[in-house]
Amino acid sequence: MVDALHESKGGFIKDGKLILRLNKKVEIKIPERALEWLNKRLAENPDRKTVRVFERRGRLVAQIILHKENIVIPPSNPLLVVVDINSSYGVVVHYWDGKLIKTEKYKPPNRGMKWHSARKLMKLRDNLYNQGCLTQEKINIYSALIRRTLSGSSRSWVQQTVDKIVRRIRRIAKRHKKDPLVLIDIPNDESLRGSVLQRTLLSFVKYFENILSWYGIYWDESRLYSKICPQCGSELDLEMRTKNARIMVCKNCGFKEERDKIPLYWALIKIKLLPNP
Ligand SMILES: [Zn+2]
Image (tube, rainbow, N blue to C red):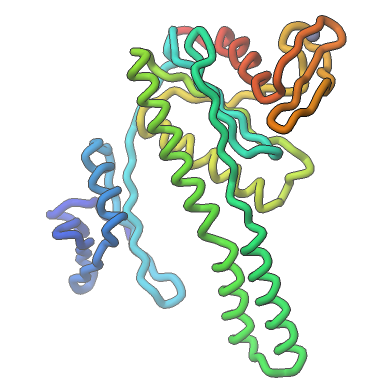
């Protein structure tokens, strides 16, 4: 069931509660943090507000969906933001305005501890099952517990990191009096396929693009290489590895740069190819 979020319609928010007019009136208290977030977003004037109400495993689920229509054209003289998502570090963000302003790195949380707990739960479940102590219903409870143990932290990492980056983009763009243009290099690593890390990084991309669109920030997905020379297109070789950096060098033309910075060179080439307004 879908209804507009308005006092004269099927659902609305009042005194920190979501009030639904279903067959009978239902009031759901909204958690404080969620309410704070919701109020901020509502103040940003979404075009469409809907509440989706449905039942899942015997529980009533209410989702508040806000939608904003933004038509964004690429700015002609932008603050360039390059977001490089890679398996070895996580997320690297470069800010460029004629020169490199800042580079920031964000690493997804280490799931080692969680895996440890999850494995213990699995072992316990299997032992009990082999001894005939568990019914199918109880096995399902264990499975739910294991899923619970492994979820959560990466989701909140995604949200917090995206919020932090978008806030920074808007702040730096304002300071430089420019509109931001965001280029995102999505992971395409065969070795990552189906892994937890890939799922985290892909959900990062999806949420990030969503929030950028919300604020009317132009973004594009683009392959930004870190192993191909931006000057001549030859393959780069790793020349030196230090604790914090990997220096890549081109045997053909002599180009030399830190590996993490090379996608930025490609981004500068690519924004010249974008359609101009
Ligand atoms: Zn070269």
